[in-house]
Image 1 (tube, rainbow, N blue to C red):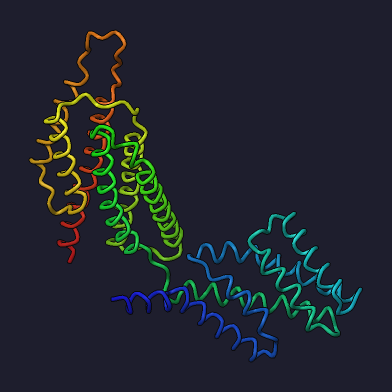
Image 2 (image 1 turned 45 degrees about the horizontal axis):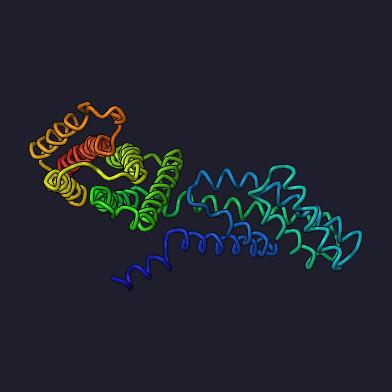
Length: 352
């Protein structure tokens, strides 16, 4: 298992495409008789996670490389092959690209500029034209490879990450609720809870990035109906998971005073949350009738907690009311996820 994972990391799609782009780029340059090094540099940095990024950033890298090449030709003409030439070529390339907003192409432009100084000895204009030609070859080859060879598809990765994230979110919810309702324990676990919460946020952001990649990719590779259905399902669920994350954050930031539930009431809440977490870990365990019964039990306790008390200093937003409100909100969102997953599974079985 570990060996297969290592092999996947070493020879992923992007690694294979980068190697192929470098090979084809150097092959074309050798056939034309142009030095391949500059084309290869451009080809390596142009392989992006999506075709859209390759095209978008390639349109920036070409003028940036032209600027770098122009400065290399200018300063080698003025100062020859000397340290001041390297310094000025790099300096002016960086400043110009930055001022023109060509940030994406700044690195490749600077590398091209300083690398050219070593190989230009005569016929500066011809050398400049060749550099533009090799840059164009690198951009075109890497973009075409990215578009037609192993086109990016993040759907399965997103689905796997979201399934894992739902389980981890359930684990986090269980820990937080137990710490909140068990007197005196919440503060001692706050750092650990915050760390888990931050990791969940980071995973959500990573999935969101993959969804943006897939959306960009669909502009150039139309998704088949089945994959499109899965992608739409994933987009809805990432929004739902963010809402769950938001409500968990409210529980973490609950006022520090102790809840006024009895031991039996605390045990009932814990049991309800354990059942909810079980559904989040194992969606196949979900049963609508049992789920509704637990929601009803939470609702009864919620309305009971909202009853006004005689203490004039009391507030409607007691810790008990906040906990029950957040749990009911999470219950509602999790049900949407479980129902949509059940529908998705049924649709896949019909199509298969």
